[in-house]
Every structure is written in C-alpha cells, then in structure tokens.
Amino acid sequence: MTKKNIDWGSLGFVYQPTDYSVSAMYKDGKWSDLELTADHTCHMSECACVLQYAQTVFEGLKAYTTPDGRTVTFRPDLNAQRMIDSAERLGIPPVPEEMFMEALDLLVANNLDWVPPYGSGATMYVRPFIYGSGPMISVAPAEEFEFRMICMPVGPYFKGGIKPLVLKISDFDRAAPHGTGDIKAGLNYAMSFHAHEVAHNEGFAENMFLDAGTRTCVEETGGANFLFVTKDGKIVTPKSKSNSILPSITRRSLMVVAKDLLGMDIEQREVPIAEVPEFAECGLCGTAAVIAPVGKINDHGKEICFPSGMDEMGPVLKKLYDTLTGIQMGTIEGPEGWIHEIK
Image (cartoon, rainbow, N blue to C red; front, side):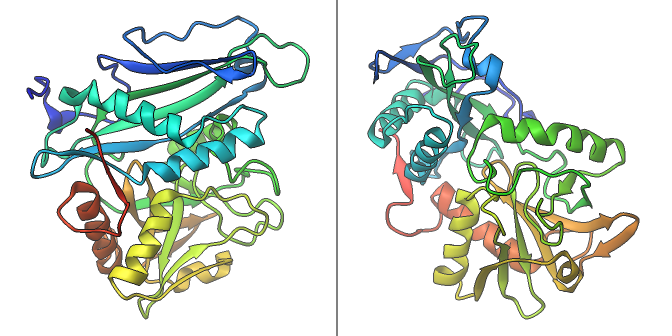
C-alpha cells in the first residue's frame, strides 16, 4: 500500500476531502444500503430541516496506523451507540450499530492511503453525521435524512504541540439544564461559538463553562470534558447537576486506564468551582487532542494557577496520555474489544 504524498508533519486540524465518502438515505421509513461515493457535496432542499431547525447529530473518531502496519480504530462501538442516543433525542431515525460499523470499515478501507503512517504525528479523523434533508417549514422533524461518514488526515488539534492552555471562566452557558448537553448535537456547538470567539479575542485558548442552573460547578469546555488530579494523585472528573455534560468516550476510557491499568483512584462527582484551586493538575480530554493540559484559569481577573505549571503536561496526566495513546496506536495492549481493526 502506497501512502499519499503528503507532508504529514505539517497537517493542521482542517477538512480535506479524501477519495471517498459513505452515504445512505432514509426515506419511507427505512435506511437505504450504504453507498461509496466520490461526490463530496450534500444535495438537499433549501428548506431542509437541518437548515431551518438544526436537526443534525454527529460523531468523531480516529483511525491509526500501528507499528506493524495495521489500520485500527478505537472503541467505535461506543461512537455508534452515542450516535444512536443523540439521534433519538432529536427525532432522527438512528443508524444501527451494525450499519455504522459497516460504514466505518467501507470508508477507511477505501481511503487507506490517506491514513497517516505510524510516527508521523498525524491521524485520520472520521466524522459520521446524520441530518434532516427533507423539507420542513412547520416545527417538526424531517421525514427524510442522510447519513454520511467522511474522513480526512489531520494534525494536532492544538498547534504547537502539547503545551498547557490558559482558559477563562465563561459568562455564557454551554447547555440548558436537562437540555441537549449530553448528546452530540450540532446545535450545542453552535451555541458555544460566540463564547469561544470572546475567549479568543481576550487571549484565552478555551472556556470553562459552569453549570447553567447554579453557576457553581464545573461542566466542560465547548468541545471537551475536564480531568482534574488531586494533590494525592486521584483522578476526578465532573458530574453534571442536570445531565448537561457530554459522555466523552476518551474520558470514559481514561478512567478505565487510570483505575484498571495504572491502579489510580478515580472519582466522578460534582466539582465546585471553589475547589478548582486545590487541584494539582487540570486537563481537557476528547477525541481530537486526547488530553490537553491546562496551566491557568482566569476567573474574572483572578488567576487559578496549577502546580503542574505552564511548561509541560503534569506527570499524572502525562502517564494517562502516554498509556491511552499507546493503546490507540497498538504499542500497549488495552482491554479486550477496545481496538477494531480495518480489514
């Protein structure tokens, strides 16, 4: 297999069409067969429900090249199930897990030369999504939908490598209590765009969103969950007061790695913002970056500085990062069923 002639080390986290995408249509109450297509344009009505009422859900996962040349993905069954959960909440017909996995195999197998080589620092990002393609002007779900799965080679999500970030506590809310914060709906991310722009304009990398109900507890950023490390080495992740934190697959996997592989104590609970200065390390976790360390958080002019500092990832998060990425890349054996090989 010959890889594309790409400077893999200079890739950013941006869209780049590959040779093929995968598509299926939902009409008359059923999904069509999957189709491999070289057409990278979605064709829909100007009154498509996704354009009128944001009826869309998506997922994100990666494909990797292992040292022995295999192409693998990491826990895609969890992405399939989370997409089912998201779809059901927005009145979208779910794509069954079997169909999701068939689409993943078809997509990656037909774009293998776009999967970055091992050691390049790049990966293949896979983006499945479903949107309401049928026209709808009344406030109701569409009757027709398209499921697409696309892929692209990407570099690191945060440019400049793994350097600690500086965040700010946002005055905006990411998601409403008991709303859609715990599903991967496009509208959730659109709601964070303005807050993200404000943070960037003020010189911050990201926001820390608090719970919308009381604004006293940590929730997440616009696109990642939080991880905290106590001074005695316990891993703590925030639990939502009102089901408004996305169940990150990376975060859930890191908690298993911490407890079962590294013998660390773990805890998922509400994390009051007043407690944050007491932690030794802080990080953001998600598919794109795995773990991005946080060095400082600005609380309306008052700085919360973590002992891990601004030079590098703290030792506990680094151990977690190295272990999980080793499992994803095939250099460390992980729990059974975590790695799905593309044949």
